[in-house]
View 1: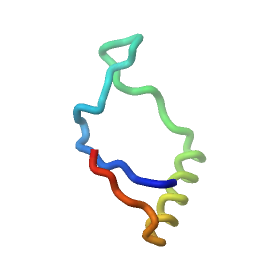
View 2: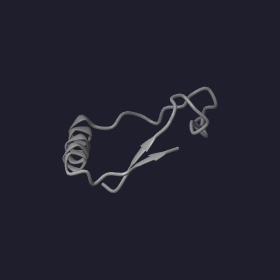
View 3: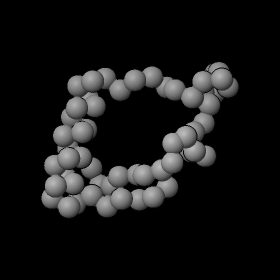
View 4: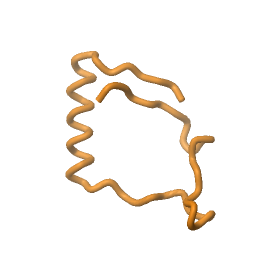
Length: 55
């Protein structure tokens, strides 16, 4: 984990699905993977190793 992106939600970064212009979602992240990401991010933030990039 090298950085955290911060942005307004919803914002200009959202794009519709190529197959369906009425949808923006690509699906859910599996819960185990999300927990792993969250733990790594928390660990890096506590060590002050994660810069924040405003998008």
